[in-house]
Amino acid sequence: MAFKRRTLMQLADLICGNFPQENSFFIYRSSKYLTEFFADIETDFEHDGTTRQYWVADALQEILDEPQAGSNALPDTFARAVERLMDPADALNEDESRKGALSQLNAALVREGFEAFYAPDGKCYLRHIVTNNVSAPAPNPHRPFSAAELERRDELASYLKNCSEDELTEEVLLPLFRQLGFHRITAAGHKDKALEYGKDVWMKYSLPTQHVLYFGIQAKRGKIDASGVSRSGNSNVAEILNQVLMMLGHEIFDPEIGKRVLVDHAFIVAGGEITKQARNWLGNKLDATKRSQILFMDREDILNLFVVTNLPLPSATWPALQVKNDSPF
Image (cartoon, rainbow, N blue to C red; front, side):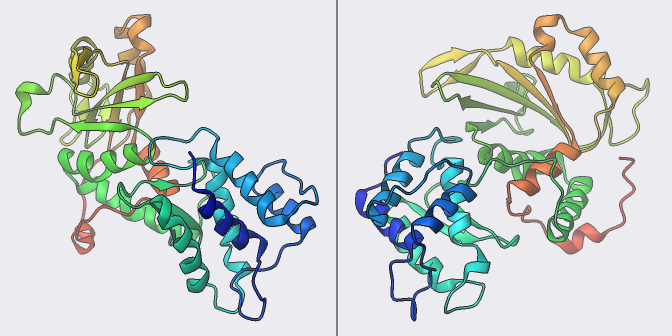
């Protein structure tokens, strides 16, 4: 991605702190500290003694040339640079909310269609203004969570216990997969079953090589098990088998290329648990080719990914979630 040179020079000034320090919102960084700054964001740039502003602008352009996670997103390294630049601990001549620094940063970014914002976790992220897509360092769903993140995770878990399949799809899965870089996400919904063909959602993902993979999603709100008789609110994996075969065998029409294509992979998503017995049973029923096309995502996966990608919680009335829940999962 190419930023205008004017924008890069403005951002370089912020990183260098090229302002009178008595009224600057950014700390001054000499050659040594510029090298430390870029080491902090996991790069190998070392200042070579040339003019700091021009050197930083060139380094930022090199970072922007890296592959990005998807359309309307910035490379992970650039997101780390902004997060490091806006560290609340580096606040100067203002409090840790850094409103003055944020205003100066956004004055440069808005020219490129992006804006910076502080999330509840206290870190600064970048958002594409038109699509609302958030650029952030690659999320690690297995890292330890902060107290605030654990609270958000519990609230989302309560929502998943009470939501319908349509709400699971529209309020949770669609925003999550958009944030993860999938695009052309099309939801079939449950009002018109005739055209669903075993999938609730289809979408595609562009690889860095520009090749495209197509995905289908079969979503169930409760637990998926392999018991002979499923309890209320659960789904038997035998019910899923035919839907998966339909999903993999039926073509979808991609209007962007004007062709019908087959789904490359099928996501089986559950708002509850997908038991090990259910996964094994389904794997044994599918041949080796189709087995490799199946991807599972249960409640734990949804909760962890939703939290680390810093997505806003579903727009439900949270007091309603305090109702006693008798769900078996």
